[in-house]
Length: 120
Image (cartoon, rainbow, N blue to C red; front, side, top):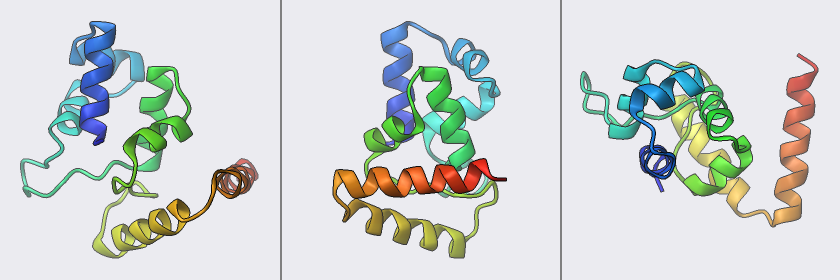
């Protein structure tokens, strides 16, 4: 499921407008609109959300980023705020490898990443 589908479904279930959801997440209305459409109107390229953006969305939905990533399946994400093709191919490789792990191994990897990030 795409992040746009997840946002639309959440907003429909909660009876929220894009603006209301944007306020709840602390993002701009334009950002929510772009994420829902999934296409950058300037480049016609797919929108690839960053991990910080996904974390913000998850918090707005009252779920963990892990739960959001599970809902997204193997949808491409960016681990940084900038998006370039090298970064995107690396992210795709991370996701492919991560999806090959069992639940216990995925939990271990996520806890290690969280530990690394908490030290920064």
